[in-house]
Image (cartoon, rainbow, N blue to C red; front, side):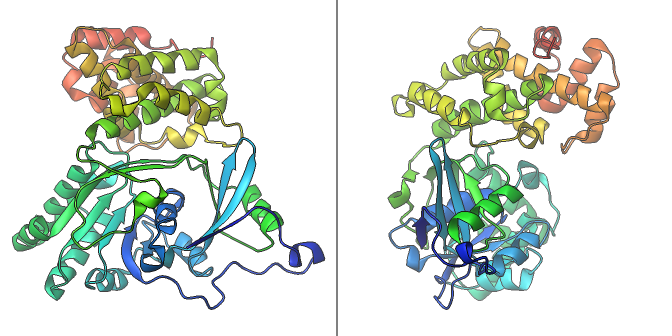
Length: 450
């Protein structure tokens, strides 16, 4: 369900006539068998791309629902769900029309969501939501809507289904199950029991750098492809998906696109969370403190690079399975991060630091301590985040975090008290460990530009 192009076609692009809008032009979309919650760029560069590249893609259409706003669905629906994926490598761009999204739907359309989840032909729900969503019990949140949809499936007798979490959350399958069951119990204890019996929760590790699309990207697609696409996606050439769990109602042959199915996902998940996402967080905070805007810029700064490599050294000591191929994975990350044509903005990565560091820096720090080492590199990442939020508060710059008010209150304290208060928002279990607090406090300012 995809078509690759590499050069502009003849016709409207050369004649100056208005370019046609991308669309299916009478070609039917694949039947919906997957529902996705969280329509956005990453979903379209990753799960939708993998589905389009499955050998049985013609049987597996996706109905993708937005999260908070309908805008993305409105734009994509006008193009019959089609969009261009711009694969941006160091040697140039490649263009591919991806056709696996059969419907793009406003997340507020709960009637359509319930209808799809009530259908026995719907086999899978995939999720790309923020980490903070799993902590909410709001009935109008994506998970609240999912639970109501599962209730409709139970009432319709539509059979089992798999829920696949595609988020950067440690143990995302278990986290999704706990959140869904918690919300279900608040609605109907019987519903929670039905979920536990009939819904499989699949854990995954997802990986593809997908920066925000810019107006220049939209213009490039028009110039190179000869049609208008108001919603293209830009991504790096690399894509990785590792899954663990059961699919009781079937699934696409994602392995044809390179997906990997494993019995135990935790080691692979930790490799990605610590080495890729952890490095991103460190570069996001240290890089911005040192005047950089993108990952590639921060990586080129020797101070940032050294801090990142030291953190990788600590993390690698706790990634011991041979099949993880950690040295090769680290080298691949260096190549990916240095891609000069992927403008992965540090400000985007820096959001929600309290949630992210809890999964990316804290486990490495705790593991190092358990082995009798200082964990100084992981501590330095946390210190860089503290410096970043303090600098943002001081300058009046906005930043995104679910605990923003508590951060601002903590930043108002002085010295070690500030360090302890901020650490309590990321790792409350470490606040009473005086050597840890002292070490982080001593590292404050070590990655700011002198």
